[in-house]
Length: 185
Image (cartoon, rainbow, N blue to C red):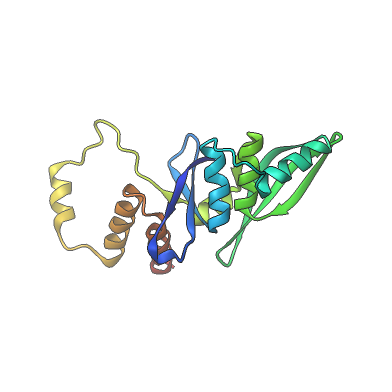
């Protein structure tokens, strides 16, 4: 996965959506994170170095002082709306997995230039598929006329979801995705 960006919404109470994008694919994974974690990720992405080490910089320095290095981060579970992650690192040749919040794991991963992975089952459950528009994929006029007829509620929500994704309103997209799952239920 690649970090696509961070977005916020006034209705989110100060929380941010960290948007991961499937490398070589068309799915995105929004993860709601706190302000401090968003700041830690944004500072590193923008290569801004504060005068004193932030928490994740401290953790990186601590790991390096023990000759340990982060190999990868894996978002491995989703339970009742909460994402779970693991930090995979090596210490003296021993491979170790450490439970972590995805935001903290990602903040460390970018400091070590480590890859970020998401379990397929998590991406299947919470990922939002985006439409890839390619030349020549225009719909025939008869299809357009058919679509202009009254849409079902599910089709309306799916159309709203696509608009939310295109405008990068991932918080709304996540809510619409949940509504669609309930309707298809």
